[in-house]
Length: 93
Image (tube, rainbow, N blue to C red; front, side):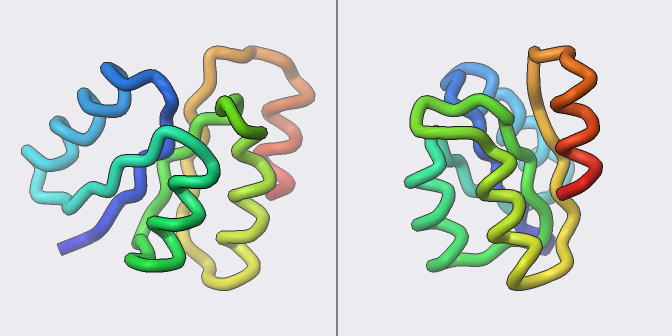
């Protein structure tokens, strides 16, 4: 079973994404901050990360960079921000 780490600080959105993925057969790990994401990822790993850009304790771009240094796994960014700069940064990570 593929494991997806969902990093989103909006509790309802996080739970909705996890529920939808679970219904499709994915194992999900829910994190609401970069600190939680770091802890869960280092303990349990993941096959894919759904990552909010703006989190209470920092930006998801830094976590993406750390994840990509260790393994080549897909990272999908979730964001309400629509700045061109954010899109370019996401592609570079």
